[in-house]
Length: 192
Length: 192
Image (cartoon, rainbow over all chains, first blue to last red; front, side, top):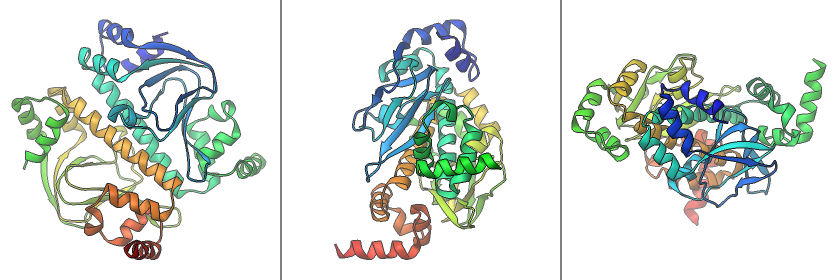
């Protein structure tokens, strides 16, 4: 159960087996069926979840009542609303499982405990947040700058496994285009 | 010169005066005149700059040749293209001073040295990246979801000092609206 998260951590920092044991003991394993909302808008996000297995999306509802998908997360990713988690303020997003998920969870207390007991984890979490920042930055670029077709091509290059795993309308809501327009793009690309 | 950065660091972690001294010794102080491009698109970003004084913006050029402002940074903020800096890959953004700036700079080598010599800095940089992530997430929300007027109101709430400091067309390019439309919004708001 801890195999993949321990590998993930050792790629970032040289923790000893004892350090890893201390960390693993603080994680809570959870199996969550698909279509479960882990976080509702206006709640305070009290978890950072490492995905052992499954697929999760984060989204919010815009002022026209439409769902806008912010991110997809699959195996070996962490999912959370970091600013809500960190500042204990209400979130403006939803976090929902799209598949049955196996998760390893931290809450604010266990995270702080982990960082106090194993200070080398600071580096692991810094790199994790950096990766997230970098992905979000690219997301912002693409949202503002490129055409629907370019966004889709970039998306499948970045996340080759997602189109097989999640419903097309979620991908459309990530790309900021209608499902019908996404369908047209896919048809056009398949003919190329 | 190091007063504000040391305060900034002590808000995040309990470094000793010796630790702070080690860190300060690795920083390079630079005065940069306004309108200097610190990073060009396609270059690798080799700095993280702490702003002692001044105002900087990051932007990129979209596929129609238009400048899109990503972020403004003022005193007590760090500025960099974190993913380019960290992964040593070409950036797709520009970083430009809008005012005469006083900066304290790290490069990848001095940053790693700092983290090796003072491991408690991992926490400082994690919190710094988290703050950036949180701001960028809000930026993405606002970009996708809200009207021009709401975006502007949110912007001046978040960055009350920016409208006095930077040209209006930069703010328009941050909000993703035309300078003319921004001007209309400001006139409308001033009559309310």
